[in-house]
Length: 391
Image 1 (tube, helix red, strand yellow):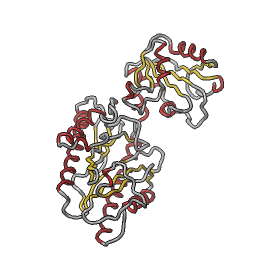
Image 2 (cartoon, rainbow, N blue to C red):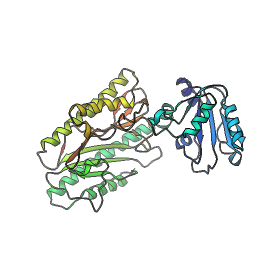
Image 3 (cartoon, rainbow, N blue to C red):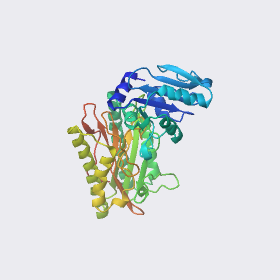
Image 4 (cartoon, one colour):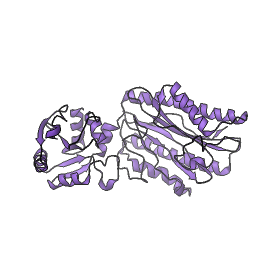
């Protein structure tokens, strides 16, 4: 834990302090930000208050009074609940604006970890509770130069493997082989392992109406063979199998044959235009040094698809935070499933992935990754699909 950096951020956000609280290892964000071991037994409630200035304070139960010994600050120990309330009130002192892992109206469920009762308790002492969402983003989703380099290295490998997968499909059809969606998925997994990449889940490989289910999973039972006239979608994500590895996550589409259906070309162009509108918006915001929120980017992207009369077929958020997990804990590009009011900040990595899903027919999704460099420049980190891959 970098206490000076945390306190500097708390002051910059005009907050009087950041209160961390946990019970039964529920707040994994707190453990990572504070550098605590979440695998250790936690059967009693603990509180850790970092004021904007001064020494942090701890409140721990007598059964687990050594729980926060690795952190700076003086400890108070409680046993009965009445003592806990009294010591907590004393620890927080006079009325303050305090950040907690809370989100008004649960707009950002990723950081809405503290239970309503605990929020009520802190409020009963006269304090104002504000969301720690931007603070969490700054400390939990920040990617340093090493992480950015690892993301780019993963990207080069994943882009290469994606191209190999499409070529495998083309070869299979041209040679009348019985290659299936599942076979290509497993080929990608094999190439990941050979390239020193790991992934939490296997990639999506689907033809025609299969990827109209955005999270379609090919299996031995449901996989079909590739044939001429098929539309194809491949969504793959992986990171380097090294400490600090950062995911790279993309989706490309193709067509087996030389003359894709007009409808497929149309929805591809709409999706591509929506993706590009989002990219331009983010780049311009940061070039002008303006604040950029996740929900704003979603609106810009989604409006392109809505104006093309496909709004109801874009059934998910525009993008998600990316980090050591493929779905990270930073700002998402979302004003559909949630209203993500978090700011995109230097060190943030995220996807832009609009899609149009025509149930029972076909689907197009185009996914790229963006990174906000530490100098404030917004960039796309890998290859960008501008034409349907013809196989």
